[in-house]
Length: 117
Image (cartoon, rainbow, N blue to C red):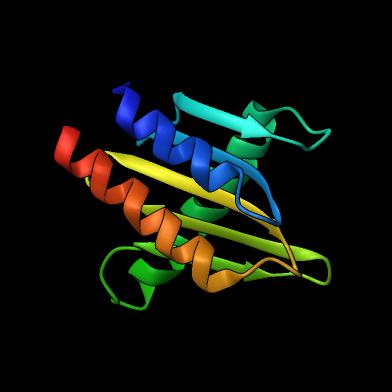
C-alpha cells in the first residue's frame, strides 16, 4: 500500500473515539488494519462483510441499486462502512466520537485510495 494512504488511515485510526479501522479489497483480503479491540480484525472484517452482504441482498430485492455505505448505531458505538470501486473501509467508533471529523477523515482516506489506484 502506498505510504500516503497508510498515513491517512493511521490518522483516521488516531481520531478520538475510533476503535478500529479495517481496509479490505472487495474479496475481503485485509489491506490495512489497526484496532484497539479484543476481537481479532479478521473476525471483525468477516462479520462486517457478512452483514454488508446481507444488506446488499435487501437493497437488491428492493431494486435500489448497490450498497455503497452502511452506518449502524448501537448503544455503545457505531459501525461505518464505505465501499469504493475496489475497496471496503470499515471504521468502528465509540458513541462519543465526533462523527463529522471521522467522516471527513474517511473521505480523505477514500480519496487517497482512488488517486493511488
